[in-house]
Amino acid sequence: MYKRILDHLNGAILLFDRDLSLTYLNSAGEILLADSSRHLVGLSANEIFKSSDPALLLNLQQCLTMAEPLLDRELILDRMTHSITINFSATPLLKDEQVDEILVELQQVDNHLRISKEERLLTQQNTARMLVRGLAHEIKNPLGGLRGAAQLLDLELRDQDLKEYTRIIIAESDRLQGLMDKMLGPNKLPNKKAINIHEVLERVRQLVQAESNLTIKSDYDPSIPDIYADKDQLIQAILNIAKNAVQALNGEGDILIKTRIHRQVTIGRKRYKLAVKCDIIDNGPGIDADMMNQIFYPMITGRADGTGLGLSIAQALINQHNGLIECTSEPGNTVFSIFLPIISQGETDND
Ligand SMILES: Nc1ncnc2c1ncn2[C@@H]1O[C@H](COP(=O)(O)OP(=O)(O)OP(=O)(O)O)[C@@H](O)[C@H]1O
Ligand SMILES: [Mg+2]
Image (tube, rainbow, N blue to C red; front, side, top):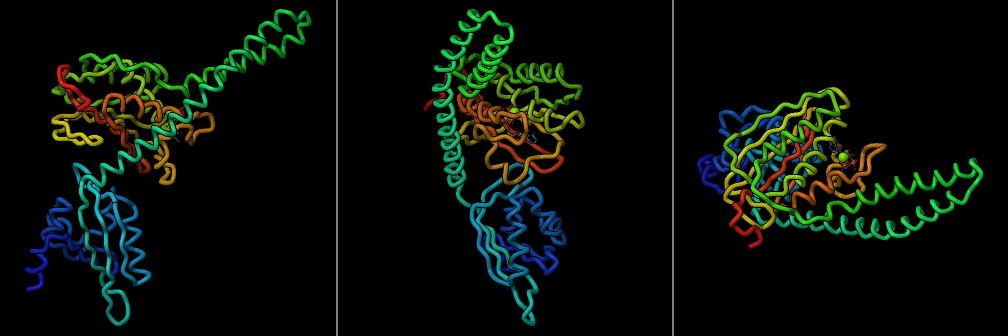
């Protein structure tokens, strides 16, 4: 009787036992998790939520230990093909004053919530990038003067020992100049033409392979139509991501570049009929959870010799193409996904 009622509810209901194994889920739960109850019942919460937001599992554990109900909002739930945003609530069911079972309700949050979050993030990243650009611009001007003066002084000096100092000033100004140019990032508007995404990827593969002895595997969908884009800018963006993978692997591991076509994809606020999704996957150590939210900001680096500009520039370049870069990571599986809308030359991409 109760099962019938539960099966007719719109909300997804899951029941876990005290070992956090799933004992029941209603029909809405099957739909939300995109799997049958026959498959899922008996699995541990760990397995069911393995590639989803880690908060899901932590919340369940907390509900179990504290024996108190718990609410959490806007968590990412991973389903085989794509992820959705959900609100989560867990209620402990007590027996003899001990938690016997946990009742979980999952509710899909409107798509636009996720979009607004995406937009907010992009705006924040943009602001941070503008700040860095402004700073670089301010430093560049006096730096030129400094270098010029050191050069003049160098010509005047007779004493070779003293020249040593002017050379250091010149060399260090050059190094700083290089860094400032990198901080300024792409300064050209994209020169868009119809191109094949695989040409871009093959070029990146060549460039990476010339510098490392890793083999890069590919899994391309040859049916992807041409995209309308600036080839050099795409090479630059994807190279920045691929180089990070090479550095993370440190000579040992695999990189896979994968392309697929997706239909009805929302990027930012706009829905596109077709988009290409290009994944750059490595099986290196992965990115720490606390680092994860920041990697696309300029000057954020986890490497001693990194400048932290690679991903910020890549995101800027892909944004100029109305696209988006996303990342998911766990040890042994880091995926950077680049979404690019497929727009023909005649179509405007601004409306
Ligand atoms: N595939 C990856 N595996 C592990 N960590 C990564 C990966 N990609 C990026 N990261 C982390 O993200 C950080 C930021 O990357 P980003 O490319 O923006 O800067 P960087 O590589 O440190 O410096 P730069 O690219 O400017 O030389 C890296 O320092 C690294 O800690
Ligand atoms: Mg980098």
